[in-house]
Image (cartoon, rainbow, N blue to C red; front, side, top):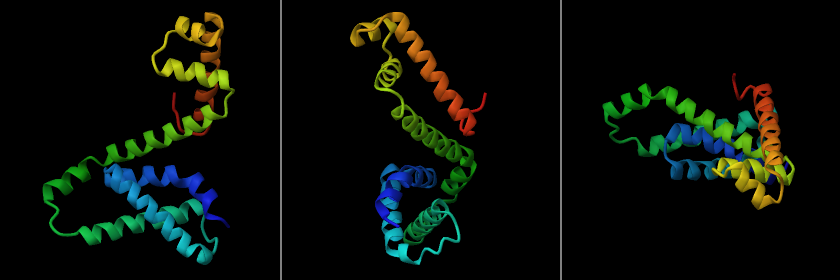
Amino acid sequence: MQMEPLYRQYRQEVYCYLLGLTRDPLLAEDLTSETFLGALASLARFGGGSSIRTWLFSIARNKWYDHLRRKRPAVPLDELAAVYLDGPDLAEHAYQCQLAERLRQLLEAEPERARRVVGMRMEGYSYPEIAARLGISEGSARVIDHRTRKKLRDTLEKEGLLYE
C-alpha cells in the first residue's frame, strides 16, 4: 500500500475533521500533516481490521489528543463551555467542508464547458456575460448551467450529502 494515493484521497476529509475539532486552520493543517506522517510510520502495522478512513481518523484524533496534552495548561472554563455549547456548529462546519470538497470533485468530472459555465455563475456572471465570453448563446449557457447543477444536486442527494 502506498501513502501518496491515500494522502490524495483522504487529506481534505482529515483536514476538515481536524478543523472541526481545532477551529484553527493552521493547527488543523499541522495536525493533518502529523496524521499522515504517523500513518506513514505505522503503515506496515496496519492490519486491515478497519477501513483506511477509520484508521486515518483514529490517528488524526490521537494527534489532536497529543496536542491537547502538550497544551493542557489553563483553558478557562468559559472557553470550554463555549466549545461545548457550540458543538453543533463544529459538526455543521465539518459537513460544509465535506460538501464543498465533494462538489469540487463532482464538478471536476464534468466537461470543460459545463465547469466554466457553472464556475462563472458561482462567480456572479450573468448568462449574457457567460455567453459572450464563451462564444455560446445565452440559451445554451442557461441550459448547461441548469442541467449541470441538477446533475450535481441529484448526485449529492443520492450520496446523502444534500437534503431537499
